[in-house]
Each structure stands twice: as structure tokens, then as C-alpha cells.
Image 1 (tube, one colour):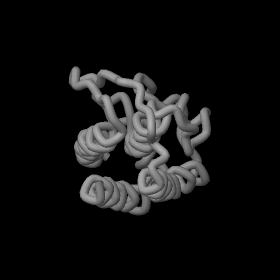
Image 2 (image 1 turned 135 degrees about the vertical axis):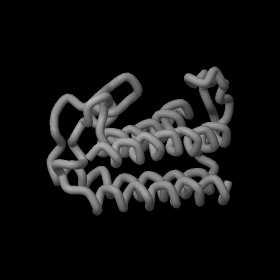
Image 3 (image 1 turned 45 degrees about the horizontal axis):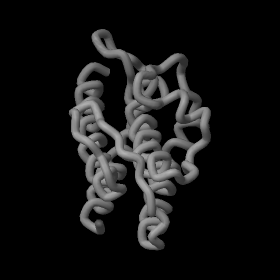
Length: 151
């Protein structure tokens, strides 16, 4: 699993760079033809990881419920986020990953509720969830790169 966690870390470093490179206005901008923005995509990946890895394992998530409700699948930006919210999201990029690695190493993930993702793949273990999460974060990295071109 070290390889999978390393991939997540590298992707999240890229996300962090977006959060530090673009202005608050740019992070919040929803370009014409899109239904979300850079900050939504970054926060969505954090929330999705928590839902896939913790929630489906029957464990408490490391993010507050209001964040889950704002950024889960099927949502879109309803308002501009503040700089304080960007800072919180930036810190969650790494704190959630570090805690996931720790919890995985401590064998906390004992159960898993099977889940079919939009690609019709069925996730049956936490290891599959972690692997799928990397695929998912890669998709959103692509979205962000497309959004960047429209700023």
C-alpha cells in the first residue's frame, strides 16, 4: 500500500500548489461551460476519499459533515469559499492522508461495505477503495487542468 499512498501524496502536493498559486477569485471562478471550480474539485477529492475509505469501512470520517454535504458527489459550488476555508481544505489534503496511512498501518480497517462506483467497478475492500481513490483524484486533476486554461 506504500505505493498507493505515495501516489495520493504526490497528487495532493499538486493540488496544494494550485491552492497556493491561484488567487481566491480564481479558485472560486466557475468558467463558462463548467459546473464547478478549482477549490470544489480539491475539496471533493478529500471528501470522496473519506467516504470511500472511512465511511464505507464503518469508521468515523476525519472531515466535518458540513464539508461532506458541500463537496460530495452530485454537489456543485453554491457560493464562493473564503480564504479561511481554502486554508482548512489545504490542511486536510495532508492531515487526512497521514491519518489514513496511520490507521491502515494499525489495521483499523476491518470491515468494508461493498460499493459500486460510477465506472461500474465494485469496491469490496479498503485496499480497492484506496486504489480507486487514486484514479478518482487523477480525474479531478484533469478537470482542474482544464479549468486552469479557462481562467
